[in-house]
Image (cartoon, rainbow, N blue to C red; front, side, top):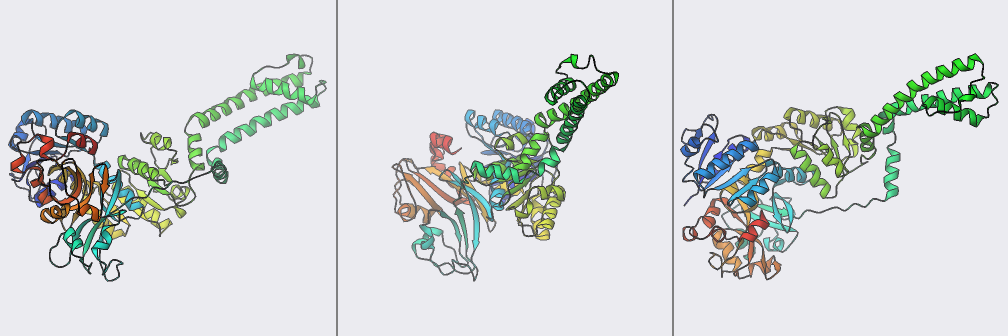
Length: 578
């Protein structure tokens, strides 16, 4: 039977998820705080999202799954608690910005899965900046792999090759296959020696490469010296104050040396510094001096107090305030092949962390000095330029001419477009990745302006929410020809539908693509995978169309089994995969 799913909160992400589930044939009802044009009253319930009456009107007692897709964590938490009171057995997919809170809830509550739009979308932005035309992501072998679509044209390198030749490559996973003629699943095409033809489409996952740059201490020092011109911008006032102070001391020293006070140059310097700084000196030096020297000493005391007070204040602000950090960040800006992330939004900081973890150099441009993520970036050793990235001078300061890519990921769509256009104006050849919140206009913006990628987090995250709503612990997902497919891991138990079957037979009968299997403390891939007989305790990683996924989790004959066994996933594996 089809699962009854409720999507609560039909904002950008929620409405995308709602429409995608409906397109996949699921029985889905939406809840929103206001009516949506084009939607009937039966499909969308209008009311207070956290009210028991609204949830009851949507059929919460009979629903299998509740997807909470609102943008406010507090409201989502209230909806979750109210839903569990009305239906203690309901499975909940909860959107949380606070990932720490989400993880705690996942550990404390059964059948609760927290998901983050930022966490789902950030890898695709990162992959796009690194040159991958990613349509999704999948977690394999403890890594997040970018997923892209290969369309076979007349000039494609794979044209005429057999799919079996691509099957064995461990660094590249064949995820799904759509032949231009007829219908054939991937495994059947691999076994039968099917050749790749013009018009075929292949969904492929590529193993990410981690760079490990090595930099010597000498190279770092040379880099600071070559960027020392930045000191003029950030420390000019401190230097000028120091010069004025030295000039006052020099005038006083020369005056006392030239006067008939029987002072050596060293004694005159000692007395001048002590007098001007207030540290004290030999006051007997001027006791018997002429009145003019005494008046000169009084003036130097007053001038010195003013000069040294101002200079101390500037020095303290430079060292303990933000100016020294700005200078040090500016001195560490990479010279070439770095990524410029404009805007430390929630998705921006995730992108920064992922690029840094991959071994790439990153520069952050953020106008708000009080942004809560600035310290996070600096703790990673990433330079932060405080300024508006829509200004040419700021982009030039980030060495945009030699950068690898620019990512405009502020929270304002108009600002992102302005930054992207300025970047293209300065360096037309540089790849530009743009964050655009409205999923309906992201594609239009990319087509109109010709940027490398204009991505909407709602567009990227909605398939993952829809896939999770259909059941299981999802490892990845994607959309091909309007069809949603998902990747997941299933633990084979004695009562599992796949137990005792050969992997190649399972793949052909269930229209799924096996990726690899963990059996007897080893991982099998390629031809060895297809010739594996599944037994109790094996873990099979696979992809499957979302339209058939619910049959695996909602099969009537296993509906009475405990939750972990009915899903085919052990409790230990659930904790590991989550």
